[in-house]
Image (cartoon, rainbow over all chains, first blue to last red; front, side, top):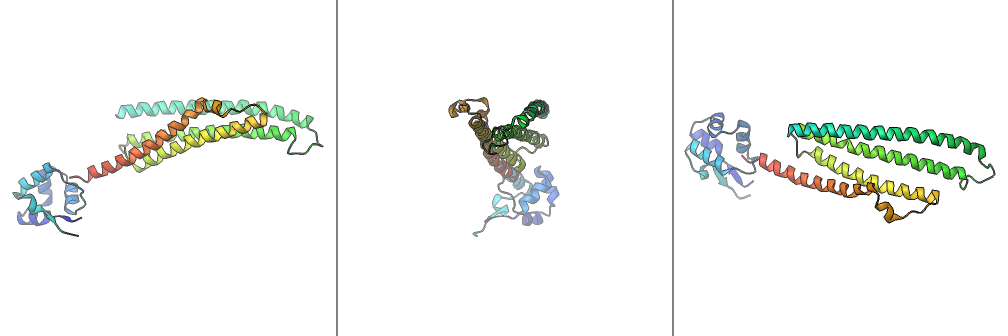
Length: 68
Length: 174
């Protein structure tokens, strides 16, 4: 998919662990790993909002469009 | 939902068991009468007559077709037993699973196969028995309602296919 999820980069910058983020955002670690591996088909605005709030960043910091 | 499934499972079992017992009873009665008649044919059969046109052969084919009707009834009951498999899947929480789609298609197949074969067999019976066979009268019989029922199951299978897709999409939406 041409949409990349750069959650790993942002997590490293904020020095946060995956399970910590999952807990703050309120999703399971399994779902978070689906998101990180790019298997997810869609992301809810509410989830995006929660992630942005937890990582104190913009959606553009997490999502990236790369032409195939 | 769970309670409803349990009730449905119980109802399905009751219907299945009663259908099986009725079928077994019919087979028992049928066999008994036919056997008596066969003994009489053996006594009265004309050995000079050619085998194919003999009354005996005609009666035999009549007997075989009647037995085939029993087979198809058993097949219909077998098809009905798929309801239990579907209910079991639903009970375990897999509503839109591949197996359910497969079972719905199978039930549709069996219902339509049953109706078509029974129609053909009834036609053959009428042919042998030299009674009148009116196709439209036969179509009015209750069992032909299984054709729309079979089609309904095909439609259900299609709907479930779409449901499965939607469920997958939903699961991969974070």
